[in-house]
Each structure stands twice: as C-alpha cells, then as structure tokens.
Length: 234
Image (cartoon, rainbow, N blue to C red; front, side, top):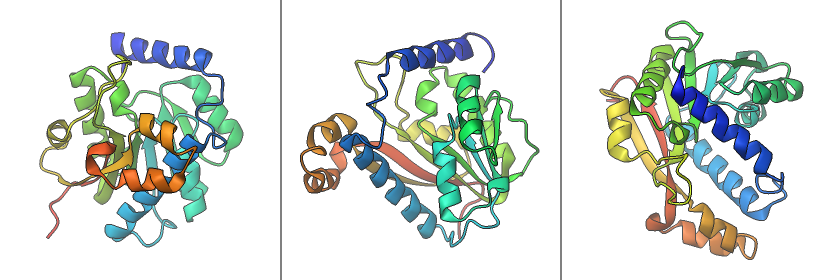
C-alpha cells in the first residue's frame, strides 16, 4: 500500500497504540474474551464445514497479521510453525510477533505486493484488515494478491465488519456486494456472525449466556465470516 493510503493506515495504528491503555483488547476483559471465543468457534465450524480435518500439512498465510495472535491459534490446532506465515505493514507489530513466535515466518511488507509465489498457500486469511483500507482500488489489489497466492484447492478465510461505525471514520465496513466484487468468479460461503461489539461490551461482563442469546439474532451481528474458493463447488 504505497503512498497516501499506506501512510494513513500507519498513522491510524500508531494513534491507536498510543491511546490504548492495554485493558481494552485483553483476554482479561470479559467482553473481549467473549468476542474472541465466539469468533474462534465460528471459524472452526467454517473449517469443518469445508472439509478441513487437519492443519498438519497446510501452508497458511495471514494478510495483515499484526503481532501474529491469530496465527498462533493455528499452532494450537496442529499446524507446523514452519508452515505458518504472516505479513503486516507495521514493523513494530512484526517485531513484537517475532519476539513471541520466532518459529513463525513474519514479514513486514505491503499486502498489495505479497512476496510469495503464485499458488503457495492452502489457507489465506484476513481478520479485520479490509475495514482499515478505505481506498477501493487498494482493496481490489489486496484481494487480487490473496487470490494469486492461493492454491487452486485452497481457501481464503475472511472475517471482518460489514457495518461502519459513525464514531470512527478510519474504518469502513465491507458489504456483501463488495466482497462478491473483490473476488469475482469465486465460490463464497458468507455467514453473519459476532454480536456487535457495543452490545457485547454492555452485556457480556454481566452475563455470557445473555450475550450468546442476543448473538442468535442476525440483526444484532456485525461481521461477515466467509470461506472463499477459486473454483465453484459441485
């Protein structure tokens, strides 16, 4: 993401880093723990539904990996650390990830020009990255790169907001129509998941059961979880 869009994203994340006290996005926060646990359950169900029974031999890439927290989950699921790769434009986050997981291949670089060969990966993932990209042309180039490095039999896993926050102009939700346009000709299994964070922050610290019941209502969900494959399924 060369130029103004990359510069804007860097400034936004630097601002978030300096403002965050460290207590918001920690597992010790009940709302955050609820969100991450429900996200993980939904992602694992997606894998099962698409016939993934083992991660042992899969080559995995996360685009916009930050410090690698999502990638470390794949080690827990049985993937070999040597087969796990991540890329992010923020050098500081990559350095933090390398300190925690020196056995994972983490690189600083642009998602518009992925430094990997065509058809290199069985899984290509993005977790709440596209909403930070406001330029439609940049979004399109990143999606094209994800398709390029995916193997013909592979799967792109997408988890991101489909709604925008009026209070945060630095992110923009990605609607269903845009996802279809970003991945033309692909098979897309699209699911609405995740209780909207403002509700989760209000309800989950008081009652996890109540939060799960609210999450069952589709109009209270805020994210799309997608499995995207290059070829149409039979």
